[in-house]
Amino acid sequence: MASSVSSAALVFSVRRCDPELVRPSKPTPREVKQLSDIDDQEGRLIEGENRKLMVDCTGEGVLFIEADADTTLDNLGDAIQPMCPCFEELLYDVPGSGEILGSPLILIQVTRLRCGGFIFALRLNHTMADGPGLLQFLNAISDMAKGLSGPSIQPIWQRELLNARNPPRITYIHYEYEEVNNTNNTLLMAMDDNNLVHRSFFFGPKEIRALRNQIPSSLGPCSTFELLKKAKAEMSKEYVKSVADLMVIKGRPLFVQPGNYIVSDLTRVGFGDVDFGSGKKAIYGGVARALSIFSFCMRFKNRKGEEGNVIPICLPPLVMERFEQELKRVTKEVEPNRLITSIL
Image (cartoon, rainbow, N blue to C red; front, side, top):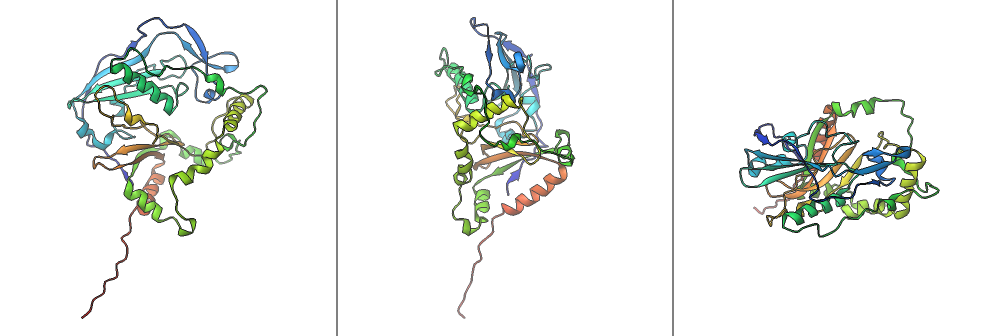
């Protein structure tokens, strides 16, 4: 089945140095940079006129923690995938650093392991980068770890490309922001983060094959590409501009929760290809955890050496129990019937 991971027996200790601010090695411009109207939905750093979000470039630096753990990568095994039970040890939540407004934009902890490897864990403000943007940042660190004086690809600030038009105009229906008259709060209460259990599920070749074997033959061959083709075709430049205009017209509305579930595909971003100087690809552990209506699909290799996708999910306890049972049923491969004949 699409196996969930339990690591209750995983026990080790981490010795951390005091968190420190790593400041620029030379003076940087003291300026304020506006985020785009699309970024406005993600959070805030400092707020200007009309609650406009801006990056205050103070040169104060990013938070960095150096640590050592008395364990090995082999001992961690599949536990490093999302819902990692030791996550708080590998990325310490520095008190006062988690606020969106006025906090360091990035927190990094590097933890050395007994086997000679290390774990690189990072937390960033999502207004600053999406998946490809984060990959560019990690590659810049990789460049400097290999001895370069700076990143091979220089960063460019062009957030104005995602600003609303003047005048703004909504040209698409954006169901994720449609107002819903929700007279029953049962679902929202059930999906409260305090009432959820966390599991991650691994889908290897066997699980994918079992799922595809259950697709009705009348639908013809079905692939991941075909399932997403229609949605991607709608994601045009005009659609993105329409979202930015909606943000301005409706005052940065939140995602509508009832009836929506958001899955971010990180399988092709390339986090596992980052090399911090060892000459070897990183073993990508993935995003730390899912949220109530947000999940992620990520590439992962389990301890058996199987390549596949791992998906973390949060659900209420009874719902999760039913979900695991159903997932086990639909991902179980059925042996083909064999007709045995004999001549006596």
